Length: 267
Image (cartoon, rainbow, N blue to C red; front, side, top):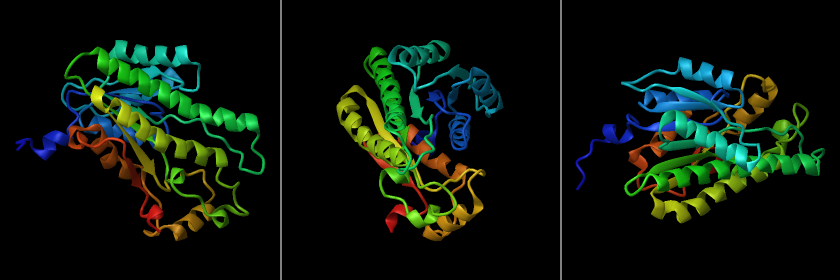
């Protein structure tokens, strides 16, 4: 029987966590969660200046010292791998990778072009390339090294949307987004079973409705009525789930999709 205290298992002290899209609506809250749990955070964004600003503002626990790198996962394979290697060079190693960066598509099924759809799928390719680089990095560190990869999915990777929530106030939820997020959920399962023997866990964290302020108020009102909890999520409500998946508290958890959606997918 293990004598480890659950507080110790949930701590990320001594670990290094790389998070892409650290400047975003949800990414900034998740970067903060990793730092609050004790990790040294490598914050990334397409613009190094933005990543550096995030890193400067993160809380520091113990001797954690936060860093910044520029990563655009939509670039070609050598560029993506080079960006990951730059993060390793700065931090010394990476223990946790959070694939969160996202290039959005604004067109719904009525107007999206084949080119736009294909471009959106490149988000999944970028996530995979970073995940594979992470797996290779863990293996290169030798016996006993472990790693945790958290892929950010969505409730819309599990269920369809309600057309009436969008009608008349906003374009329909993009079909390319649904296809992307559903693919990420299944890619999580696939990589998890292949990499479990390498000491690398792969899980998906799927947020429900967490609308940023730019979303039309009427659409937020309609979405609220669809939620069992009758409210939208707050970015800080993702913190506990992310830290759990990243930490040793989830050491026997891999290939799972953890939904934080206020009960949305329970209907």
